[in-house]
Image (tube, rainbow, N blue to C red; front, side, top):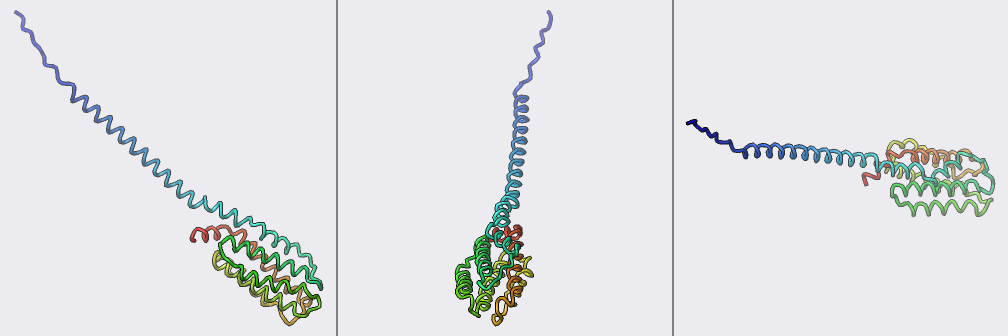
Length: 215
C-alpha cells in the first residue's frame, strides 16, 4: 500500500506582517520627507519675505516720494529769480518745508512744531519788500530746516552724515546782517545742498528699509 505523505503548509501570516511592516516604513519615510521639504520651503519663503518683501514696499515709498521730487526739480531748474519781492526764496522755503515734512513722515518722525516755526519766518520775507531783516528770517528758517534734516539723517540715513553737515554749514553761511540780494549765491547754495541731501534720502531705500524694520 502506497504511503501517503501530507506536508504541513507553512503559515502565511508572518509574510503578511512583514509586507505590512515594509509598507508602513515606506509610508512613514515618504511622509516625513515630504513634511521636511514643506517645512524647509516655508522657512525659506519666510526668509525671502523678510529680506525682500518688506524692502520692496519701503523702497517704493522712499524712492518715489513726489513731494521730495518736486522740491528737488524746482531747485535743479535754478530759475534765478531772486528779486526784491523774494518770491523765489519764499517759494523755495515752502517747498523745502513740504519736502522735509514728507521725508519725516516716511520714518515716522513728528516735526510739526519745527515746521510751524520755520514757516512763520518764511512768511515774513514777503510782507515788506523793503524790510532789511529778510536775511535774518531766511537764516532762522534755514537753521530750523537744517536741524530737522540732520535729525532725519541721524535717525534713518547714517551714510549721509556729510551731506547733512553741508546743509547745516550752508544755513549758517547766510549772514543775517547782509541784504538778501547781496548774498543770493549763499542762499541758493543752502537750497541746493538741501535738495542734494533730500534726493539722496529719497533714493536711499536700503537704509530707510532697515530703519523701518528696527522700529
